[in-house]
Image (cartoon, rainbow, N blue to C red; front, side, top):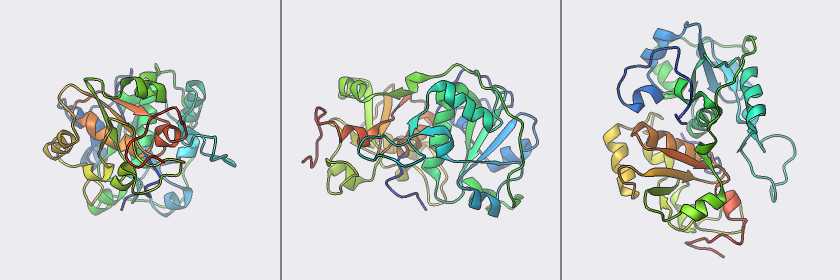
Length: 308
């Protein structure tokens, strides 16, 4: 049910906007970052709700939650459109903030919007990448994931409609950007192994240990990183695992209370699914956006576990 392993990445908080809609409760971070179908059903017609279905237009036309709008990573990311130079261009990078604001406004998003993002069948990490992008743009406090996505919504017997998206009024995004949510290769190199920094590799284990070849020239992982594939954090339906189960997995990966969780993957997609789970537990989070696509290309950066 998961996306192909070469699609790294869905979220984070630290935004500067107070949500105009109520969260599910005033409880833990999870209650703000992840909403249930029941919560969404109760707020589906709220004035400031923006509902985004991640995926292509064909999937959207087949079925979507009433009022939803389609979004793709190509719309809100750099290095995802046109003919790509795979040897030199990094895929799925954050856009310059002014450009990103315009792209989000095209989707009808404004500072007052409460954005709920959901996946269809196998786009969990794509969806968390969209959420993380919203947080980077300063909208993290008013954005959340629909737990279980469209499939869970349908399983609960809730309404779905078909056909193309309806036109929406252009929004205006002026929220304060959160550039600290994204770190560079040089930042990672300077901080790896530092007390209080937990570096996690969200790829599948074969890429971490070097038994499988990534799309770059080298195998292995960043020194000091621990393996935590994002699939370990979600159940077979695509729902986020209970808090206790998540905590156990982060502890097994060496994460300690108070650590800042820094995650990477192939291109910066799968990692965001790990970061969402970490933030629901209260950990500060950061994304190494260039991920192993960038790290593996740079001969000046060290690699462990199968480097060649």
